[in-house]
Length: 166
Image (cartoon, rainbow, N blue to C red):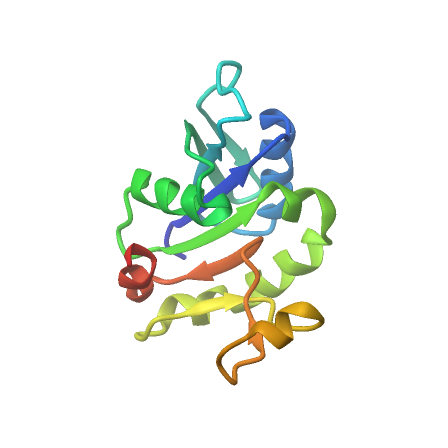
């Protein structure tokens, strides 16, 4: 399995706790995982340290950067994506809310099962939880598309790079 890039946006979470949650999320994977933790202006990286950690069959390397919070998750994701060396790898985007409030164990199992297929596809891929517009957002949707992939967790492949850059 090739390397995986991970971009994590954090707002008010403790950096070391987020690193533990990331390691737990990837415990079943057997590859190199390059993690960029994007701290918003509300978060200080002064106590962060760069490290490499072995978890199961994976080698995780962490890099922490400060980013602007002007576009919420998306702005942090783009800054983090630009900070990684992407050699045609899958890139996983997640935020601290996903790591602290969701059943990440279940998502990790689904992703682990699908990762080889996602890596082998030759077309742009957007992988995540399909959600449906409802309530106020449904009435304000201008297109006939009533579903979306939430920004708290999604995956793209190297063919999707131009989508994230636009």
